[in-house]
Length: 219
Image (cartoon, rainbow, N blue to C red):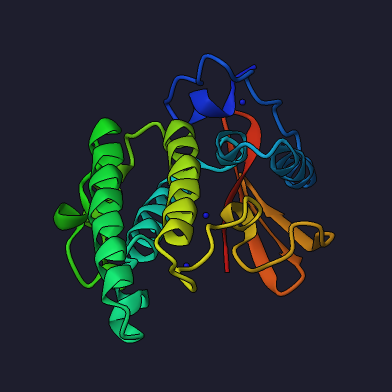
């Protein structure tokens, strides 16, 4: 530890959340890149997610769920490792509650629970059967719920006296991973309805769906 007039949500086959306006259609890959930056500036994970292709939305949702399960495991970072049994008990209780809440979010969105995803988690993130089960969910709505969940994890870790539980993903990481969303695109190459371009240390992929360009992944 990564969607338009035809809206991006429509391109993904999803209804846009009631409080969100349909995103603008990106006429070029460069427009898609710019609109992704503007979406990050709204500080709304749902808006950012709608700038991504359906496949990239799905990959991000799986990665977010797996990452959330990892950062929610507070007990291993608690007093168990520092001879503070009181802190350990508090962290274990918080962890149990957080993992239950994570599964509740997954069930709400009709996505597989962490147990259903299976192990090893890092391998399961790319498993076709896992991606297929996540594909139909409302990814912008899921991203918003997960953003709120990460805030809960951070608060619970602080309350339990746990440090080092990991940071929630930054919104630009939904687009570029550890790349730089503010870096200009370079070497843009368009081939039909797909395109690639360099941006800092990463190569970004783009795909045109229903006439609108979306960000389709990164290498």
